[in-house]
Length: 377
Image (cartoon, rainbow, N blue to C red; front, side):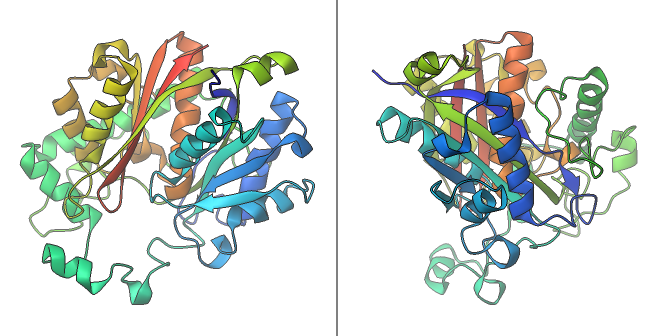
């Protein structure tokens, strides 16, 4: 029976809004990680059957099938096809799911999954009808004027009884863990530095504390809890993973890093919007026959601090296994690229620490979530 394995995974450093990467076209940023991936693995670009690329705001510089433009910008043969997918913040993770399914079905020998978002160049929300991508009938169904993730985060904090202090403490921890990962060299193997531009994640604020974050004003409600300090940063970045089967890897003398052990999806209330990772996690554990304690590392996207905290409260996941290298609050969340960035971080951390199982899940606009379990090889 065919399986799907990740041979290697790379990502760019994550640049902050209007920062070091803002001058780079997203096709060129994507091409950078594509070329680094084939350089590391020794697989020729002409052998790639498809490139599946995640991107959320597919307008402006990211329009016209950014995945295909990335392949051409990389200088690869015109025969290499590509497609671009959008499952909101989980687009890069969904690209991995599609790629793994294609390998298992026998449609691909080698496929690259990943994603990009250049939020400095293509602002969030650019791809809507007059700024409102949701049809009136859907808004009427839920009795709202629009869907807002920040308001959803406020609702989560209220539902799970999370105080401003708790959110800020978690956020300060994200910065501290990310800084420690940089200083220890834990990120070196996963990064594809952009020469002369950026070598490591740009958004980390060293010395952040709950006390300093307490001075920030609420962003979505006058008396709210969500601020710029306990939410993910607007960022630029890309990541890519080479996926094949164990059989093909053996035939080519490649040593895979991890197997895609199980995947799941979930949908939930699109108003609160951010709760679906809880159900997606339950589903992927059930399908995989694993318990939460079997998982040695979790990447739960830090779109807002209430997301991983509510998820942890419901799952009982160990604190030291949750986002051990920091997360999007510290380094940023380049939307369509984040799924690939998180999975790259997870694959390398599992290999460095000899962790058998890792789990990744992400909240997504519209009240959706992806969940993936990887197995170390």
